[in-house]
Length: 278
Image 1 (cartoon, one colour):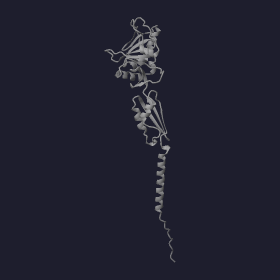
Image 2: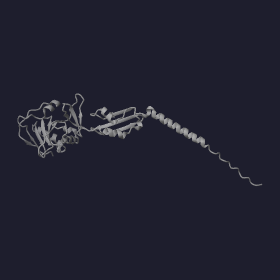
Image 3: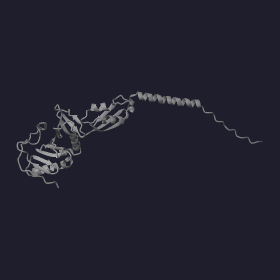
Image 4: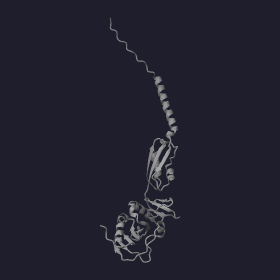
């Protein structure tokens, strides 16, 4: 008797039509859920926060950002918001954080404030480190930085001065109430600074980084010698001289009114050379 071969089981043909049906059903539900998601509140911006601004109005930043609650969260580009806000001249940098669901946080950094000036209508304006001018709208704002007076509106030296001041510690200007242009043939960028301690300081914009850190030490050495006013010249060499006879002491009328200071009377005396600081 011949050995009988085992019978091979034949595999059943797969039901391709049912698999296609399942695939299309899955695709349909995914599409439906996607449509429902993008139509729901979860896909929309619900809150836009702005922080870090002190001089630029919040509404101005919101207008530049061009993002409002109700916009689609995923269609908003953080880079686009950054570029649009940085187009504002007063803004130095911008950081945008998108937090799902629906929140966008905008953190701005303004150029630092370095001085004030009075506008044509008497409005107090803040000067930023890039030379930008921002009106000060806060009532009773304290003028805690020097006032620039006597400068033309578009004077490039004024912008240069603002940039030079921004590179220095603001505390170095704590005693300075006013800065005026005081050009000469030898020093076109020469300036005169009025101090609250009743001194006038003559220097240049170029010399500011070198001279300002030493100014308080020079004034302290004068006070040790009972000299409480006069003109301090800080150019190639440093020297002190009394106010000329019949000349008002430090501070213009506009600045002293704004600062609440009364100019001191001039004092006579012998010119003194200030020894270099060791």
